[in-house]
Length: 112
Image 1 (cartoon, rainbow, N blue to C red):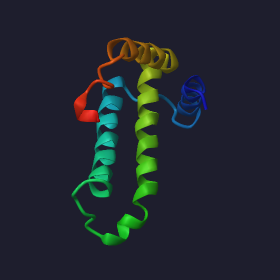
Image 2 (image 1 turned 90 degrees about the horizontal axis):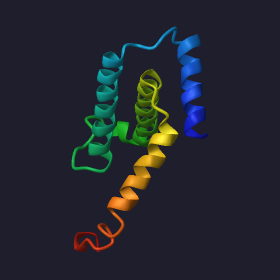
Image 3 (image 1 turned 90 degrees about the vertical axis):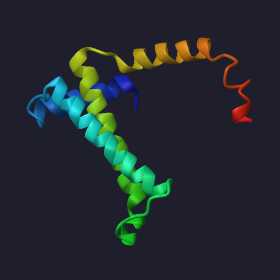
Image 4 (image 1 turned 180 degrees about the vertical axis):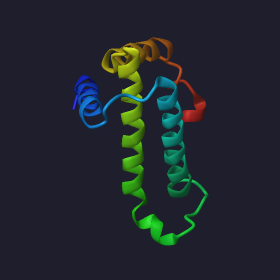
């Protein structure tokens, strides 16, 4: 799915099933909440924290995928609300990084 399609799909869902967008500040708070849920799972799956209930580890990767999707959904909502074309923004951002970091990472001894 292209980012433009994702933005349209989310907008269609919001305007039919979701009734309307939450306010931008509410969606920003929701984005932070969802990002925290990703962080919690990452700390347990890839960091030093353990699951309170070891059985939760069995479904954690599926939960992580769902939380990533939640973050993406809310990010797309915010982009739609603020008139940002994510495909165009990502292209511009990659161009900026390519120019700025043309040799930076390749020449970084910490990455070798």
